[in-house]
Image (cartoon, rainbow, N blue to C red):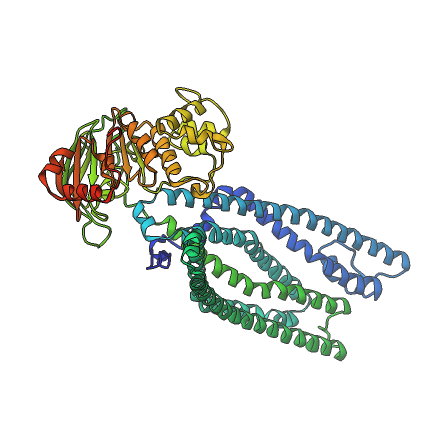
Length: 638
């Protein structure tokens, strides 16, 4: 689905069926509400047709005292025959007033009911569709997020789904309006004058054909517009997120030009589509104007010439009242076609995303043990991102439960990628990764990931409080913090948060914050230092009480004093847990049970710190380089 910029241009490839049909399927659970809305909407449109008929009857029967019975007489609502005398005329007028009042009451009641029912259905569809899309997005594999940008996903979750709600909310009612109005008016006009009705209705098929042509003409343009705005959103999001870098390098002008270039592309495509739309609508107005003139001339000529089939004065007025109502929804067909195409383009992206399948899936009968010891084995593992060269090649490593494994090596050696295979963020191309002797591909994803905690080099913190971010490590504690309750399995929720913070050497700095554990950390934890963010991430991981912990450069952004505090409690942190520690600061892994040195996706050395230094290989070179540079390599207390 992704292009080179991480967009969704190839969304159609994941579509299953027509996107609008898929959208309407979301309304199926609300068929009763939707059906009532459609029914009352038709009643509203039919009630709107009554007042012009009353006006025509009043002109002919009350004002001009014509003997022409009219449509209301034919259906038995008013008496037929010539009306003479003031009392009879007033009586007929009163009947017409009662009919008009009833029509307006019906129209008001059904208008409220139809709009409420249809709009509330559209809101429910929007809610369900956004929830399903977000949930599906969360269950896609990591390789999807690697190849797609956040701006494009946000555009789908917000702009595209909102556009579909607007389509259901507005254009669905407009379609009912067209069918009911054109159908009702056609019947009435044909009843009064088939000849003039043919003239009046002649543009209907023309407008229908023109709308079909318009759809085919505008479709590729709106698809391009949606992709252009997604790229623009992505650029804006990247720049807003990278404000500090832009300011540090004074790249305001460069980024302004990049945004302006994409904004201009969006402008040009939008203006081109606007030009087509305006030309289309102008041609519709010209067509309806021609019909108005023809009805005026033909109908007026028949009346002047005394043609036996000529309309009465009231019926002639009725034609022009209906012409205005007839062509208003017909002209709206063009706008609806425009909105339909926009909605179809958005639906393609939404349902294209929903059609995307995760590459990492659970087996039919997933392994879900009650507990995990923490034995880990990498067996001849090879992995690559897509069609690229292997990032990991032929790696084998046995790790007994409770062991601490340090991983060292140059940047890009494959250390982080290797450990991402453990919780199945990606699946191996060949070989196997096993936990307690079971291939991780045989585990249920939740059962596997509940036993693995990861602390990354740049940990992600959610916008919220300190306590919220630590509590994220345990579902029950998180629920308790989120809902403002205190109950959680094992202990008071806040006590468990504090306990985890103390274990991660974070409690002291947290209590110094303005609101303590209730201090807001800002977007991505921007209000905290790098070291503070990492200690919160460690506390979050510990609260999960995993069997396996992965520290990926977890002390890279802490000062020497903080690093010492974390190292002093490291043995306590990994007690009875299997730990993988990736570090460039080799002091962090000096006391590991085994140190594994990787280079170019392969294991080139393994052993204890002492044996590797004595061997004089790559690890020894890295150690000497850190010693010579004066980096912190000595263990605590030395």
